[in-house]
Length: 266
Figure 1 (cartoon, rainbow, N blue to C red):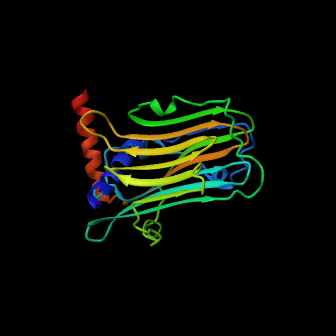
Figure 2 (figure 1 turned 30 degrees about the vertical axis):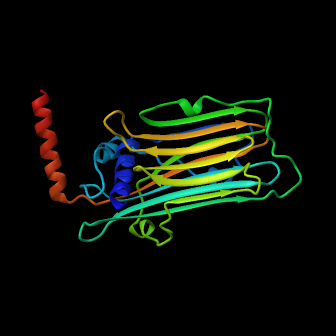
Figure 3 (figure 1 turned 180 degrees about the vertical axis):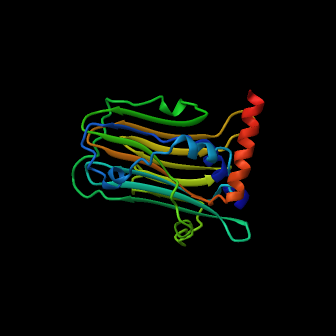
């Protein structure tokens, strides 16, 4: 299992280190989800990205990574569905790699007699058929008063303690639903990838990480489909990277290598 999980982390690093974007589609103020609003982009310049590209766990640069996928859906009757999947990969002082996972899912409510807000005359379809090599964020909304946010955050300032805080339950899957089965939340690690999904009467929210193969490159996909009114939905992907300090000798070697490459180009 560890080998597959490590492959997930490396593939995600290779695919995501060039990404720093947020896609939002909202008809309500962004204060409805404080945890979503609190996420901020961290600008990453070309020099940092150039050093990260092609570097994986146990490589020259990255010594640890935490991937967290969180999807949350709140309906107007107070019913809330939440699913979270997390993967931590770290290297110890002997340069040995270890991996931990965590999965959780919950459906809470309803908290009032209000309806689910689903609109059976509205539809939001087609986004699940989008096939992108790399990263895709799709938001489809049919209704009024909805908030839908796909967010991806990359953090290059992770600390060793944050990558091994012991909060992982090592569960590779989790599933929850309400008594009627109309609201479901699920997380699954498998086939070298991660999937998080929410299903409600008013639509779906999914996040998928799939490794590359001979036929296609790796994929990171966030999808929201909302067919209803007054829905509050968020997909969050957070990637925290712990980087090794570069020694003076390594900096000199890189300088010589770049000088040789420039000489060859000329």
